Image (cartoon, rainbow, N blue to C red; front, side):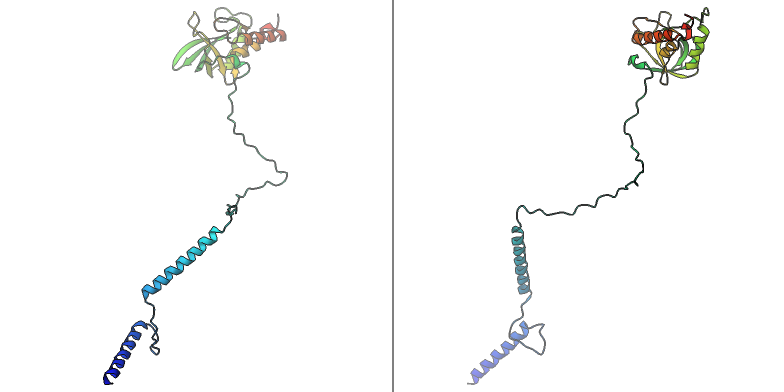
Length: 241
C-alpha cells in the first residue's frame, strides 16, 4: 500500500514536470496538461497553410476562360498644342534644295567641273583665268563674237563689255565638252557664273553667233535656237541686219 502510494506520487510529480515543460510561455497561474506546440510544429503548420493557399490561387487562375482579354494600362498620350482657330499652319519641307543649272544649261555634259577666277577679259568670248594657281586663256565653246584683239569689228566693243559685266573678277565654273584645247592651246569650256550660263547668255542677247565646232557639239541645238530668237528680235549685233 505504501509502495502504491509512492508510485502515484512519483507519477504526479512527473506529470507536473511535463506540464511545466510543455506549457513554457503560459500564464504562471495556469498550469495546463495540454502541451504547447514547439517551433517545429508551428513551422510545419505555416508551411501547410501556405501550400493550401497557393493551391487555391492556382485553381482560380486555371478557371479563367481562354478567350478572356486582360487589359493593360496604356501610357497617357503626349499633349499636343492645338492652334487657335484661324491661325495659319506652317509646313516644313524636308526636300533638299536643288542647285539650279540655269537657263538652257541642261545641254552641258556631266564632266567634272573646274573653278577659277577671271583675271582679264580679252574679247567677247575669250578670257584669262586663274585655275589652281596657274593662268590659262579660255575660249568659250559654241560662240563666235565680233573681233577685238587684232582688229575691232562691228559690235566688238559691246560684246567685250557684256562679257566683262558677266564674269570679270568673278569666280566661275568651267566645264569641258569632248576636247580640252583648240589648236592655239586655249582651253575650250562652257562657262557658268552662279546660275547663269554665260555662253548662252551672250548669244541670246545678240553679242555673238552660234558656232558649231566638232567634236564639242553638246549645246549646238540650244545655241542655234538662241541665235535665231535674237535675230528675230533684232537685238545686239542683229539690230541693223
